[in-house]
Image (cartoon, rainbow, N blue to C red; front, side, top):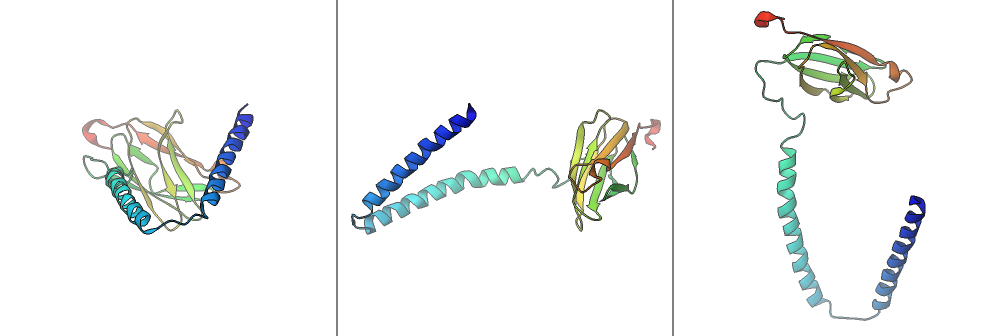
Length: 180
C-alpha cells in the first residue's frame, strides 16, 4: 500500500516539476527590463534574510548554552576522577568502584579505535554514555544515586569481539559518617 502511494506521489510531483520547467522554458524567450526587478528582489531578499537571522540567531544561541557535557552540573565537593581507556576488546579503569552520591568525572579515551562508553544499571537501563576516541579524552559527569553493580558496554561496533566488550563497575552504599 505505502509503496504504491509513494510511486503515485512521485509521479505527480515529477509531472508538476516538468510543468514548471516547461513554463520557465516558454517564458525565457521574452525580454524584460531587469533593473527594476533586480532592485525590488534585492530589497525583498535583504528583508527576508534579516528576519530569518533575527529569528534563528537567538534560538541557536539559546540551544548552544545547554550542551550536555559542556560543564559539570552544580555539585557539592570535588568529583572523583576515574580514567577509562577502551581497547579492542576491553575497558581499563583507574578505579572500578565509587560510592553513592559521590560526583564522578569519567575521563574516557581509546587506545585503538572508536568505542561507545555505555554505563548501564542493574536493570540494563542506560544511565550515561559518551564516545571513547583515540587521541582525545571525553569527560562524562555522573553522580550515582543507587548502589549496585553497573555494566559498561561498548556501544559502537569495534571489531570481531565487540559483543564481549563488557566490564563491571561497582557503586557502594554510603557508609555512616560520610566515609568511603
